[in-house]
Amino acid sequence: MTINGPAQVLFAFLLVAAEEQGVAWTDLRGTLQNDILKEYIAQKEWIYPPRPHLRLITDMMSFCRDRVPQWNTISVSGYHIREAGATAAEEAAFTLADGFAYVEAGVQAGMDIDEFAPRLSFFFDAHIDFFEEIAKFRAARRIWARWMKDRYHTKDDRSQKLRFHTQTAGVSLTAQQPDNNVVRTAIEALAATMGGTQSLHTNALDEVYALPTERAAGIALRTQQVLMEETGVADVIDPLGGSWFVEQMTDRMEAQIEELLGHIDRIGDGSMLEGVLRGIDEGWFQTAIADSAYEFEKAVTSGERVIVGVNKYVAEDEQPLEILHIGADVESDQRRRVGEVRSARDEGAAAAALAALTAAAAGDDQNLMPLIVAAARARASEGEIVDAMKSVFGGYREPPRV
Image (cartoon, rainbow, N blue to C red; front, side, top):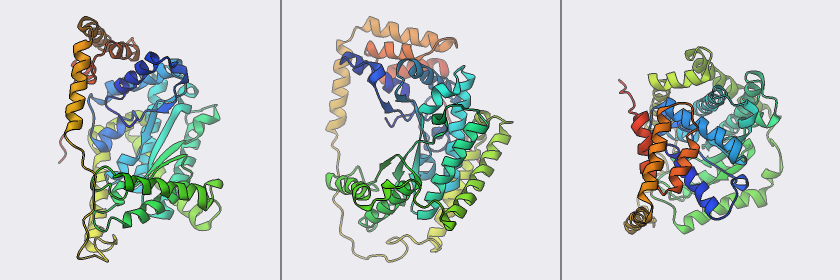
């Protein structure tokens, strides 16, 4: 479930849908992205200030530990950090820092680390530099395992495993000569596979224009299936392990990531959680990403970095690409359905559930997830539930940067 700001609300809707269909919560399996820290760092889709939002996340971690034990509560997402312009080392470092921050937040909320850490998962970008990406994945896995064992003293081996999903790089795709994007995606998917990913999303060739057409989505799917079924690369654990070049790149990448993590730790006075929050507040993450994005664009503009079809091997007369168009009827139909739900619900029950949620949000001694679920049962809308908590937590605006 690729949702962050209102993640707890969407999850509550899922839980209510499950119980109304007779499915036990203990049987539910899935993953919620629910990574709000990377929103402040890179993607910019937030609702509340960071600390109350972290409360919602730890409430959900505790709730799922007890009630929905097979659910992965957070997918710590480096993908959006990389897509915003970060380097490979920055993507890995900032993502791991967010992961460690969630670990510390969970412990501060009173949970035993091995009760929730095995349910953390990660989401990385697979960019176009083949060996650099493999080194990034390998280094990230080593650092997570070492820190979780040595710094956070986990006892369960599952807490030390960096389980991650990978998506090929949207920003590496070009509007010019879009058929080239099939090649880019295949190479990036191969790097992710050889770097140890557990699941994979391959982008469609027309992603730079719109949601994929059925044909483009089919090519993306077949790219994965050819890798999985025909090449044999998924049959080997760490296939490039022992390569002098890859091992040296992995060591170098690990050192770069550790240097960045060390800085975050220092500005947090020994706390990764406080370091991440301070880095967000002071704009350190945002500045680092902006600087890296600028350097990348300079290299493309100067021709130092070649993008085939963009600044080299340019075609004069390209054929237009058929893309998917979504009609306005989709929005109007959804508005109609929401209106029907509101008109049929018990308004008193919905109002009472929202009032109870607001009152609980004003205190700090109640887990808010059961109250969010109760509001979902009463057919309160996503916007109403969000507003009930926002009336207490307030909204968030990123401080201006000079």
